[in-house]
Length: 416
Ligand code: AMP
Ligand code: GLY
Image 1 (cartoon, helix red, strand yellow):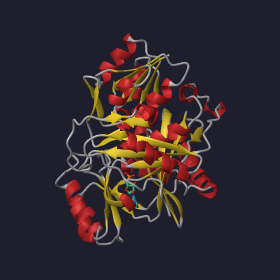
Image 2 (tube, rainbow, N blue to C red):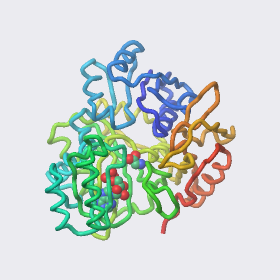
Image 3 (tube, rainbow, N blue to C red):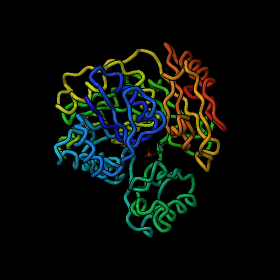
Image 4 (cartoon, rainbow, N blue to C red):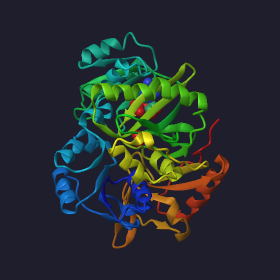
């Protein structure tokens, strides 16, 4: 089969690596890809991002299945357009993609179908939102309604901080439209978990749980990032928590998808907060997480392409996804300065013996040399029978990667 994979992050390198292991796969084109997908087996990057151009390419090359990595093309309706052109594509159509594309839409969906989530109010008007801040409890959470590249959530400890957030979103318009409408939400205290799942619109299967480490510094200090490393499975997701999640969040979400008539054959990522009052859904993403994918796919023993094919033919009820019983950690190596300003273009050197343990993200191949090209440059994998073994291996493997200014957290996988 010939596949087309859309995206350019570490997630896409992990997807390309996993898909390339399938005996059924002959070739994977990645649009636009990165330095990692440029050197992966069976893979070739193509420099196209426009949806109409991608359709033309998929027809010309007789692509069997297109797989979408990031959320932007999904909320822009790439799935609808490919299907109108008779092309097979994995991902939700635009209506279902709005579960990630609009916070107010997803909160209304959660309320309608009884999915356990934080209390909230939606505001279209800055004056009304500012007045509401007089009545809420602190900390409170202010969220931009639309996609804001992971930066649209402000945890406000005081009313003053909340006023600042509301004004910057709604009046100063820092998210260029995405914060014109906002959600103000109850603050939930607990530990977070990411559970990715796959659905064909009839059946939903959870993947192994994961724990992201969002802040830039050890012990969860400093500003939020796209994610500095992931541990899978997530040790906080016990059997009881999983049952609570499946009953009160996952199954109800599937009911909602069916009743709303969404054309949803793809990934649903549940961003959870495990609290003393039970497990709550913070948000949906309609794609795999980054860097969750790097750890979760490393543990998947089943052929991902076969799982995707079963999803597209609505036969997920016949699938039993097999997982490695071990623990996987990926530690992100970032450019010095990230998530603020940083310099790009430094050479990246990777020891041959750990080549299969590195997923590249903000990296490009230039004249056969790998160079840094983003904030989160790459992830290094550690796999073990126990958490300690996985941690030890990941931090040992990291010694085999060098580039100027490389920074990583030292506490990925440590938990109380
Ligand atoms: P989101 O984009 O909704 O996942 O939010 C980004 C991050 O903000 C989450 O991963 C949480 O760390 C935090 N967050 C979002 N909503 C809440 C909430 N209601 N209570 C506490 N933290 C939250
Ligand atoms: N790692 C969080 C995300 O992909 O949204």
